Length: 271
Image (cartoon, rainbow, N blue to C red):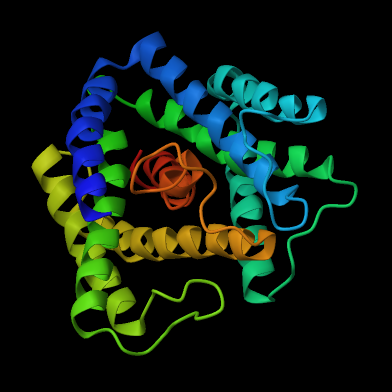
């Protein structure tokens, strides 16, 4: 498993860096493709029959509306963005956190409602990868949430494996510990400050610390929210498309919370 993870990272990280630096239509198209796959994974997961999820590459006809919605948001969000999208993103994220905190089982009746959930969760939040890239010419704002989210996860994983004993949410994510989570929050905060300074982002130290206090928490909540949905559906991973990591959605879960956070922080606080 570790060898697969390292091999996937060795291949994937240079590609991701290159795409962010390139930007433009190619970047937007890749983001759209990623969200298409993730939205199909989501629909397949929550529409699982008898605990066996339908493969995302064999969707029901009505599930195809989810990737169509995701594509539409990637295209339209940069043009249709206004003061309402920020509060809407907060509502979507808060609803997912509330469902997890209240231990509400994730069931969709009729199952077609999962399409609307996929569009709101994966399509809308994920499309912020495009508008965040549009904030500058070199992708620095996109690098910030991606690198800081990775750092948060790495600190949490390493410390959790070394000294973690107290489970933070055993029913949702048995591997997560209080010790690891605290390390992730602290390491994530420091990472935001350092990354913002190294990248030369136009933030004061106070703004970087404020964002650093929020981003790691958002990353943890995003991860736990998706884990809650998976546990409710009775699946371990959303698919097996990413060797050693699970599905595309499994890699996006934290970023679906941290990318919109960084975007609206940049627009509302820094700008």
